[in-house]
Length: 241
Figure 1 (cartoon, helix red, strand yellow):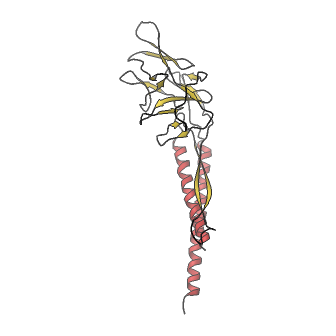
Figure 2 (figure 1 turned 120 degrees about the vertical axis):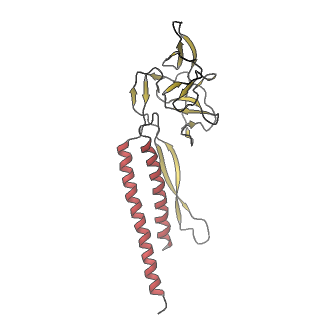
Figure 3 (figure 1 turned 90 degrees about the vertical axis):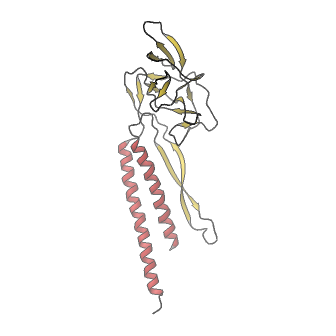
């Protein structure tokens, strides 16, 4: 009987975790540059005497969906969509270098180039400063040119664009990092200016997966209820008359 309980309990817990992942993906279906999180499970035996035939279903993180999202033209000079396997380097809240595909950039009150969430955008020499009230243009290789008033265009830096053959790891802040430390700038990386990459989450597929997970959870709970009823029936049969 306890095998049935372990099976249904572990399955229900794994299904709840899957629902959490799907719900997070669906909530970010309109987030620029978002990569859908993927999830898998593996069977792990329960340790202990007499429990070697019992197993739990534990999450086995397999990373994120590496497919690019749809690119939409915006016409805004500070919007850039990374091409191919390129990533934009930014400075995370913890001060470390991190990477993102969200290319909607802004200039803050200090004249620094930042993301929509206020994270400094990194260049080859650190955070990029473009100045206040300057017209900013970004070339396809990430080169940044500013023009103030009637002055001549001036090159102020270049976006640090990186590429990685190995999958990057998503952090709790939603940014990606390399397992072996900071990545070097890739001179061959390119961006599409005046455009943004959307999320690669399919709302329809995610909704269908959530419905399937909900039905699976219901079946597992029915298994638990069935185990309880059998336990009650066995207790009645074994109870002293």
